[in-house]
Length: 336
Image 1: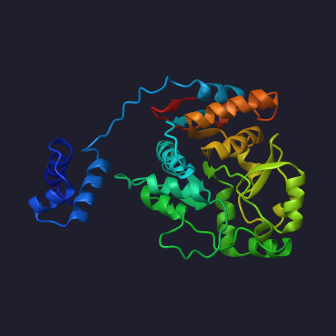
Image 2: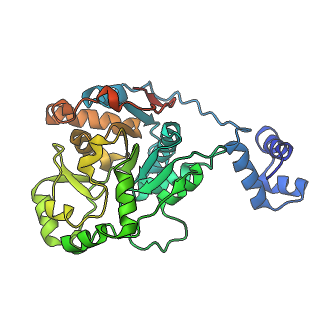
């Protein structure tokens, strides 16, 4: 553990005096990569606070409008910075990490989805100073992981200091019989029981990512003919918020997106032009209670809803008072 005085000294040299990381390394007699790590630690421990004043646009009303139309607990909007969707994903992922951390309490069971959005959130979530006595589980099965880092749910659980339970099963199997067999396995049963106790579910809202190689031509044909616009937890849905693909459902090892309504806090995360239609469809399913996106995307979702007809008030059930739990709070968005 680096002492506070060293962190302060490195921070003053870099941020106040404008010294380069190479020069600081020379002054302190350490390697340059260590300077970078010290600066990162100083930010994480609150010794350095970086504040960006954005005066380029007025506050957007899109968050409040989406919250009203879809009976959401909260909408959190990251600033729009343009550029590639990878950049948008990283900015939105950083905000989602803040929302997740502010939502978790001791004793909770927290489910984390898979994919690039969950990975961006894991990247942005700094290690906690005070561990949370929560349990983190995946919301989907996956393929045996061979990457350079752990799966997103493990990384998020590790950053929170929470207990982590894995799901040793693929997300998609060949047939319903295989799914039934795996669901009978003692290790999978543990996760199924934890799914029944979920307090928070965090997941990305995906676009048209399916193909014959993953779903098979018959299922792809079925969901395309049904007008699928996006997916949540390997569950495709159409623009009116109707879940599609019953045959796919029988082969999927994942928390059933149709049951997300019963989870007290469900956090849907997505941003960028390609996610506008999927976000609107996901909101109409009623599966999303807290939305994390960026300003431009939120405004585009409102515009699309205006063009395509009535809002989702007829699709999403109003949140019952008994479902209200600790409310995520952030300075970037509206609160419930």
